[in-house]
Length: 265
Ligand code: SAH
Image (tube, rainbow, N blue to C red; front, side, top):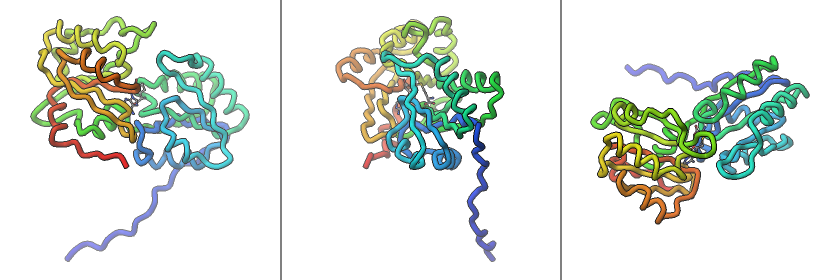
């Protein structure tokens, strides 16, 4: 005898209280990757302060009547200082608004969500964090590249290619990374790919090791360039890859040959 099918019930979602801020991850692109909490927040916010990276399809879900404020940091272009964003969030919450701070991917993965949350605590503003699908996991999945696979790797490292001054961050332990993480996923590294490759090669990774650069992942304009660590800089320059883009290095890249499943509509 089979068990009766339980009645489905929608989860009860928390109130978006006036005067509070929700730090919400919007995922890498495809609006279908939003969490239920993110969709709930979009339906109830009074003001949405969003990043440059948030997909237009996600912004289209903002409740009619809610105000949109673009405030994002974008490499190379003029963007508001982080303190300005923090101040704005506090100011809007103090006006008694439901403030939705919407960020690409996950707010706590290279998204400066921690800084914003700290500023809110300091100002005594109640907040909630709504995690999102980070580009380095979900975006790569849309490119048919799993970040772990049983026969490939038992560890993965997420690394930022962006330090102060737009150069590689100082203090990265390249030898440790090269030895310890069979799969490496770099965010914000498009303009530093030649240096990243040089560091990894100098630290002992192979010239023939597979690498991929995934641009605008999980959006209709997704492109994937598969190459090797040795040819990376040259191939990317020739292909004029557009930001935002991720670099992934490691054997998992080969799985794309069979797992390239996604076709944008
Ligand atoms: N909080 C975000 C990351 C912000 S840092 C997250 O969790 O995904 C910005 C970097 O994220 C970009 O430079 C790029 O490396 C990566 N990124 C974000 N969205 C992307 C997308 N749709 N496709 C490829 N890379 C993306």
